[in-house]
Image (cartoon, rainbow, N blue to C red; front, side):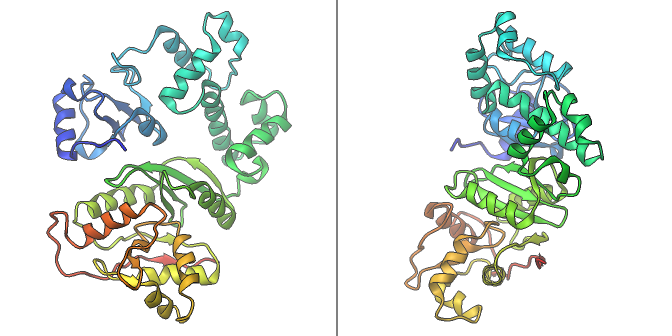
Length: 366
């Protein structure tokens, strides 16, 4: 994991336009939806409208477009001419499919394009174009447009081909999407590594470490439980989460104030709600947690439910340890569990006072 300077240092460097920090971090500007190098000469936004990323990929995943002035995707600020031509073409005609033969005809090696976009966007050129087409199609479907009307406009040769591609990307057939729940996903950096967060209009439904081995399985389970589609985007609950996590890691927040969408078996939900009552700065054993849910002999089952928690940190499964005080397991890695407990115990230079019970408004599932 790439380490970032402090927020204060990065904000100061960005406002000064300090080129010495180019490549050290990237700045996303919420009001414009673009991300820049620290040395960008564009007009500086208000400090509350910026956020910082370690890599261009993190900024792109969070929904930001590269700045056309400082060109953060290239080491010297200028993408190669052939890349600039491709980007300009896609901006003009996002629905047009640019095939390998057309790339060759314009003097661009398709393999070279694939590698460049893979390195800078984390996906191939074709995958990047496809995601843009499908994202625009999803927006139009939710606005009420007919699938037959959208398929051709999105660059697909047949309606069946569009339906298949849409289902692979968003997990549901397009005819269902106008009524489906949308789970908007965002990338949130943190001192213990990047987090993937998800929210619906009801509230927060996902917060997982991006490198967790079970991440894909957790997302599939979430999709099955909620019955919605997943796509990158912004949401008021994700913005609130981003702010509250920042305060939590700064030692300035103990109580998360977010509505939660909890979906699981009756037993899992009972365990997850019990986790919300563990005081900040304290730990419970698995046996104590089992007793709290009324099944004192179910320590193993409680441990399994604890590991299936899909809203890390906010639902504090990291506060459950072995009876002998050892940390036990943790989906995000034991080192993260230790770091979170140290933070809450005031062992990282934080000025913490008496612990309080974490209070989060958790919605009951239907």
